[in-house]
Length: 147
Image (cartoon, rainbow, N blue to C red; front, side):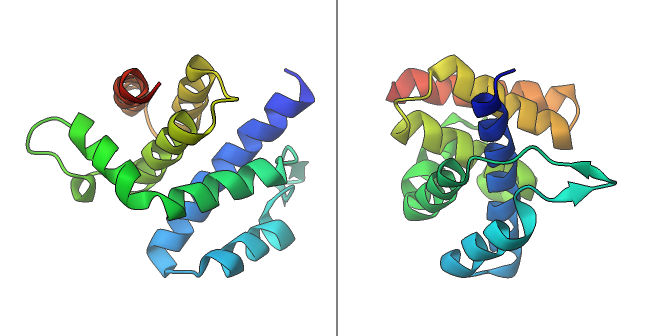
């Protein structure tokens, strides 16, 4: 895998974590970005350095999701099964879907398949295969609408 795609993968995972933290702790955006720049991106866990995240890409995804949250949530909600709402989904799952939807909406430089498969990979970091398939289905449906 090339360095840029590794850095983007790391940025996506960090963006989901940052958005989760923002949701749980109501951290202000500027403070959140600063905290991740200072302490989380490129951090070492269990003596293994995490891949260096592409900071500008991380900032764009986090800021973009925050700025367009209502639009993104409407798109995601429209693709959920009848009777399901964002509030019923796991909080991490919501951030994965928001981040993926933002990329599909706003990052024309990222190919559709790459954006979807990257967030399926992020889902695998937190969930079983069933939930990863769910991410794939929802983002695929959103891509068909917005791309």
